[in-house]
Image (cartoon, rainbow, N blue to C red; front, side, top):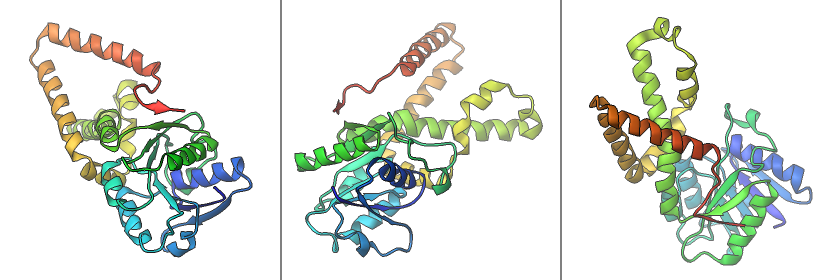
Amino acid sequence: MRRVAIVGRGLIGGSIERAARERLPGLELIVLDRGDALTAAANADLIVLSAPIGEIVGLLGALRPIVTPATLITDTGSTKAAIVSAASGLRFIGGHPIAGAAASGLAAARADLFAGRPWVLTPAAGSDPGDLERLRAFVSSLGARPYTLDAAEHDRLFAYVSHLPQLVVSALMDVVGTAVGAEGLALAGSGLRDSTRLASSPPAIWRDIASTNQAHIGPAIDALIEALETLRSDNAASLTATFERAARWRAALEGAEPRGVSSI
């Protein structure tokens, strides 16, 4: 790839830009943000859509009449099935870099954001294997570790490992804060602080995630409610079993490497 266009200059798009400039000095970069003409990206070898999910869907529609058949398109959205569906007929392979930072926006972008981090690619059934290899090479050049998943399985998996934790933490912080107020929170120990870090996440991004992955988030919430109902039953054996399983899964999380997905 000689010419890459990045559409969106937030944390992820800005970090892709900085990583590419640092690691791929011969690459021609076209960087666009809101209000810029998409026609500037029409002849790129690769277009990376780095925006909220709803905007990505809109950008795919806007690109459809202007891109050439030679242009490969990918994205960085946190849900994949809705985006892959919107890209039907385009030369498109979905993407999801598993990287983030405490702050959002271009000011928080950095060239090493993806170093050693997974980057999930979700080719459709008819995707060109050569396009997948090109995209894997590009992702690897940014320092990430590419993995391949079906779009539906991606959304199911991330409903549990990402979307459910965010919703739970936000709900937990809301319930606790409403119940005890600022004075009560002043007495909280480090456990509440450590377990509610995600409660500072901006809601705009999560509205799109929740609305495009409800088919998997709903069952995940149901499973959690069932687990909480079990704990509320005051059954010592159930509580012990839940805590013991949780401790084992926490240990597995600490040493986890992505498995069950193909990588290079």
